Length: 507
Ligand SMILES: *[C@@H]1O[C@H](CO)[C@@H](O)[C@H](O)[C@H]1NC(C)=O
Ligand SMILES: *[C@@H]1O[C@H](CO)[C@@H](O)[C@H](O)[C@H]1NC(C)=O
Ligand SMILES: *[C@@H]1O[C@H](CO)[C@@H](O)[C@H](O)[C@H]1NC(C)=O
Ligand SMILES: *[C@@H]1O[C@H](CO)[C@@H](O)[C@H](O)[C@H]1NC(C)=O
Image (tube, rainbow, N blue to C red):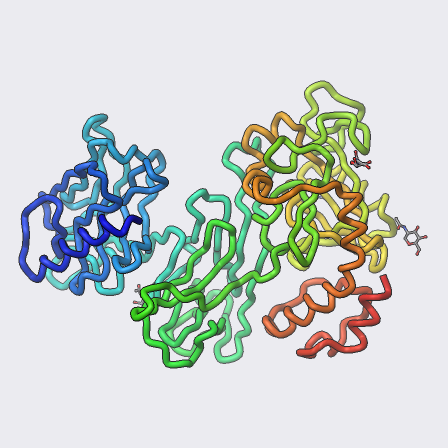
């Protein structure tokens, strides 16, 4: 946001004091029934309407992506939107919009006489609390009819409960964070244009340790909350948390505004506001390995650790990312998801086989034992909802994906992948959104070349990654032991051991 318009905003708020101003552009501290504020479409980035008592947060018209209009609660010193309404069909910034309150809070496009967004509530007044929580209240003893804390967009702030009734979404809705019974996870969302049959893909999971409190079946939904002492706590009821996910400043006595945001790259990060430095200081990052982030390479790609370089699973690209072979590629036959073979007319999927690849999120995938790569492949080929399988010839595990190939990472030669790949046409029409962003930034290399290079780096990488994982997340519950070793106490060692070394050089 430009410093100039921001300065103007500060002046406006500074001049507010406790005085109830009636000029349209000046923020007040309470909206009563009958309130209406017109968006003036001026050249600013933000037009405040309602302010919290301290003037740190404001609700107002926010300009997003240079041209679009949204309603947002901003942290004013940083201009960071902590909450956004995100209308289904947003209006242009220069639209004649207005925000009105007549029991319900409504954003209207006056020219088109169309409701862009509404809270769907019936209350008496709207206030913005000093926590940044926007509330619609009713009655004399404030009953909360609606609050923005229950409808987060991509961020939760300190003190805000995130329950399984809500989720965090990146603003393009490609990624989501959701709670399960005793865990929370990060997910790749199916593209809205996908022609069905694409499941969400979990790419990161944190399971509650339940050291201080148990999560009991039927004991109500769990929720997470960023706490002032610098951690994300999971609860089923108030009291000792069932899980504590510490940030860097955990118990360091840092008193500041904290937030946790699911960022556009699909990573989950926490920050605190450093008032003196006037910046958000990074305090926690969920995913530190680029190959564990779905945005690094996108769909139909292979990520090469540790650099996070990307190669296409099939050789073709559509110019901005990895797409499918356009026909007659490796594997030859066109086929549907149910294994129809033989170049069927209009077949939307092609089969691609790749050695030396495995899913970075394999611990989160369903798997079965299988006697051979061919058997593993056949189980996926005939399953209408299977998009790919990877066989580990070392352990005999066969992993299944019910979404188009994502999160594939270079591996040793024992891993054999089989993928159903969308034809170029469909991948180009939005389904391959995953590849799009990454493809622009990342040089795409031929798989053959990169996999050779990867093999050299691979041994070292595995040791490094294991050390990171062990240190970072001792509480993680490993779903499938895939090292070709029996599960043993060495897994819990914080530093690398000779066992890990020999195992990584074996393959
Ligand atoms: C968070 O949840 C707890 C337990 O249900 C509740 O007491 C508290 O008021 C909630 N906080 C907010 C800000 O909604
Ligand atoms: C991909 O391209 C490389 C280099 O051009 C080639 O060696 C390889 O055979 C191709 N693979 C497929 C599946 O077409
Ligand atoms: C087909 O694959 C889906 C998703 O991987 C799985 O849930 C289902 O059990 C499979 N069906 C059969 C018959 O194997
Ligand atoms: C799997 O391992 C067996 C025995 O080690 C070997 O004979 C076979 O060729 C391997 N298959 C693949 C696909 O690597």
